[in-house]
View 1 (cartoon, rainbow, N blue to C red):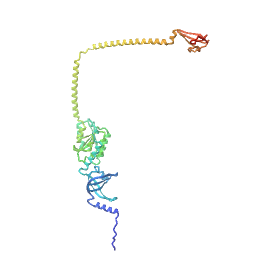
View 2: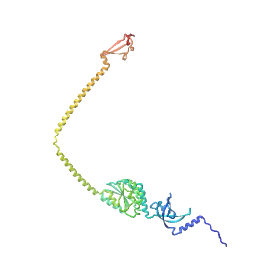
View 3: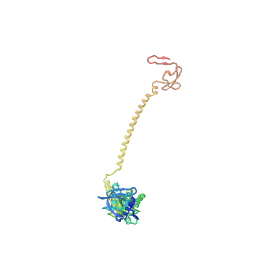
View 4: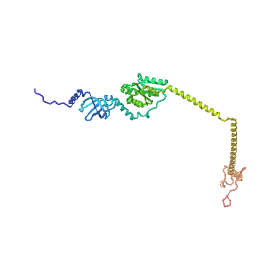
Length: 410
């Protein structure tokens, strides 16, 4: 039986699959940490992340599946120095090996702290922390909404301090998760619920102390935007005095502890009563001084005689009455003279005035005024109006007068 010396021919897929299995079976390459600088970063619409991890001498292509990318607390950016935890394998379609990243940690700073700085810088650039956007807290709130865990120590501290300072204040708890993956959505829901309710004068949002991981819900961007969008002033009271969260920067007032938030939100009723009593005493003293001054001033006035004042006013009234009567008589005399003059002028211009001087007016049978001989004929009857009556006459002759000539019979 002869030997088959024919060389075995492999397909590209077979070789690529063989090399991929070698990578996957290698203990080092199947789980390793690689440090370098991110470049050529791209985020696909599917949520997968693609970037190059490089140092001064080499570079390696990296990709991160969407599920792992969603768990990152911060955003990847070009120029970041990071440590990538993942595995080396082959992408069979291109035959290239690449690093499949499962988690990324910034170098020199924790992932959460790095995410905190990123969010803080981005929101500050948008103006969410600006002082002129802060709402003024009410001095004497009637109702305070508390957003926190109903089982934590924070709610008990807030209620104790608030009721001690102002027993009349109304406290309404809006329970919410304050820790864990679902806490950010629960905090946003509670903030929106308080605003829809619309009866609170101020909101206390907070929880007790804990690690950065425990407080992380108050660093979430969606919580910060919900605080900024609230129409009701918000006091942030998260953790202890040394703890700072994004909620502290965007809220209208930061309190170092939940108890301090209750102090800030309420007015001390006993202090108000003391101030009221002190102001009341000052007002009483001021009124007494004012009353004493008025009494002294009245006592120093000259003796008042109402009879003399009445007599003076009566004399003034008589003088005024006499002046008015004179003015009325003078005005009536002037008006009478003007009326007589107008009557004379009207009489002179009236046709009746002409009749008084011997003129007459002739009218025909229809009552039309006759002003020309051409209007009548011989035998017509005319009515002649004189000053004191009428004459009926018959025309026996007509004569027309022509200027600069003698009369002519018609």
